[in-house]
Image (cartoon, rainbow, N blue to C red; front, side):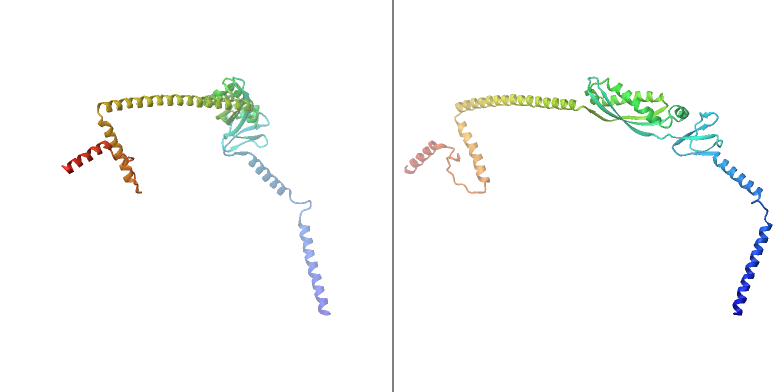
Length: 316
């Protein structure tokens, strides 16, 4: 019991000592909060840091910038990529993306022969970097949305109206070049540079397409009929030539037989050679009469004469 009382007394005494020291330290501090010099120093450092951070601006890659001032408005100077100075709280940078951007513009217009044409152009555009202040003052950041659809439709309708529907297909390159030339001139009025203009799609109405297909089918049928007529004429000519050749051959053969009776035997010999060659080349065995194979080229009369001559000679 004595030991427990002594321990509690010692702990209370140490706590009182710590409390007294804290009260003494608190009495030594000045009344009314932190010192004024420290607050001023922190405020001065913060102000300098803020002004230093906002006294420069950075232009990212692929961009240009112009400055808008609370006093004089948009300045004409154009700032390239990198870090540049400005007046804090007075001047503010306005960045512009100057990289080439693609845009597809579709237009429905009529041709010279009053055919409806659906044409799509792909335009590559970018702002004129030296005229960014003019663009920002009059058009803003969405200059391409404000300008390109209207001028592309205007120029496309004007050019397509100068050509027939068939010429739009056969002279497509010429039409594309003319549209590009007119668009470049028209876009220059708005300080926009066009790197390329090309026709990506060109189609006509369903009625015109069906009429063109029907015309092509009719032309093909006409060509086929012309071919058939020419083929019949050529066959007729070939038949006439063949008949004339056969008649001439018959006349020549008749004259040859009339002048030389041995011509028939010569033809028999040639025919017999061909038949004998065919039979010899065949793999099977054939037994035919000599008369059917034209092997008996001398004829029965000659054989009869040879037989009678042999008989006379035998009994002689």
